[in-house]
Amino acid sequence: GGSSSNVPHPKYDATSSSSKEDFELAGDLKQQAADAKSSGDLEKALELYNQAVLAAPPSALLYANRAMVLEQMGHYVEAVEDCTYALEINPDSSKALKVRGKIRYQHLKNKDWHGALSDLNQAQAMDFDPD
View 1 (tube, rainbow, N blue to C red):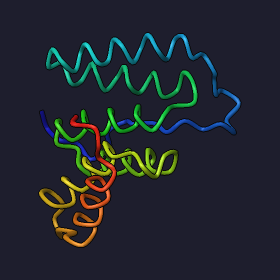
View 2 (spheres, rainbow, N blue to C red):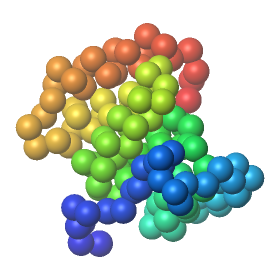
View 3 (spheres, rainbow, N blue to C red):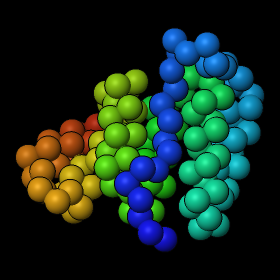
């Protein structure tokens, strides 16, 4: 697809009057998004993750998972933003650090080696989880 630099990937806004706290709906949407992602339908996965983010206050993991979809679609700037959202919620999110480190290392036009190394080192330091 033509990679437009304006991919919707909303951030949950607790101060917004339209913000919801439907954790059950968010859970369903996350499950559907994971299914779409594993079957390779990234556009659908992104759409479902966006809905899940807006359905209830998201976890760091939700943002990190959406970042992975954005990264696979080639939307690196948005993916890095999602990793940053994840790390605002949980500074120890090794998934977010790994995705952001990888993108900083491989894809950003002015490669951010220093940022990439610090992300990946930090992820490794915490990574007792083989995933």
